[in-house]
Image (cartoon, rainbow, N blue to C red; front, side, top):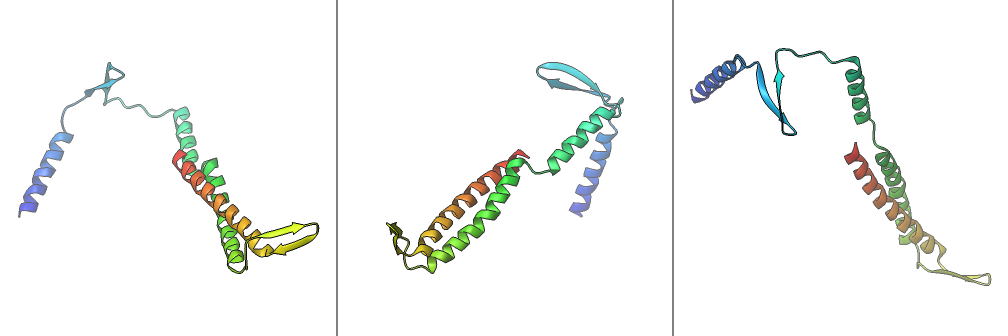
Length: 136
């Protein structure tokens, strides 16, 4: 019963305020008092419509930073995974060559380089992706 009464009061108040005789209302912009007449609403011009469609198109397309960030992220994640697998299967991370004689584990050394580069690309990509998403 209370819900029906509240709904009825809300319905009456909305219909009362929607039928109010308010042709104009004061609108202040930059400390200038202007009056806007609500009864004469003009249709948008073709220039306004084209600008509106351009802004809609720009909002739907990703920003350049977002595209670059996605690319860096999607390249960096597999590199980090491959580098991590190479590191886990290696005996060490050092590889030294002196006068044609090499010692150490090449897989561990190159795995660490690939892993570090993959982490760097992923971190940079995530930051650029986030910044590009905010600029959209």
